[in-house]
Every structure is written in C-alpha cells, then in structure tokens.
Amino acid sequence: MPKCDHPDCAEEGEVISRLSPEGFLVATGKKAYSFREAYRRFYYCKKCHDELMTNVWTRVRKPDDKGDDHPAPTMV
Image 1 (cartoon, rainbow, N blue to C red):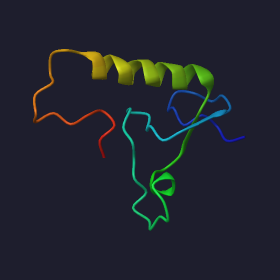
Image 2 (cartoon, rainbow, N blue to C red):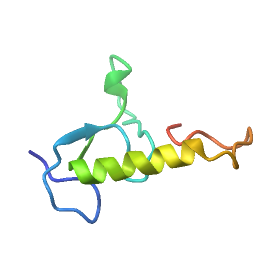
Image 3 (cartoon, one colour):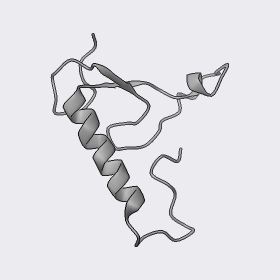
C-alpha cells in the first residue's frame, strides 16, 4: 500500500481520493477515456482523509464568501 499523500504523514494510504492535500480536485492533464480517469488519485490514511473532508465541507457550508466570483472548493 502506498504512503499517505498528506505532507506531514507517514502512515499507509488506505483511502483513495481525488482531493489534493489542499482540498481540490486535480486533473492529470493526460488524455482520459472517461471522467473517472481524468483526475489524479491521492492516497490517504483514514485520519488525514477525514480531516481533509471536514475542511472541504466547512468551506462549502460557510454562508459568507459565496459570491459568483468564488469557485467551489472542488473546481479544477
């Protein structure tokens, strides 16, 4: 199993995610045959993945900072 992709973690990455350590979806830039293949995969331990998802949902739910000029946290 690969190491967790969070910069400060050395645990095994048991959870596969498309969210970068900063909480954004990251495209690979390579040709992909489907939407599923178009995004880079990251590996996280359960603890780091849970923290990342909590941070993403906190940003999404914040009522302030929702103007039209602000992209969604998962926008590429």
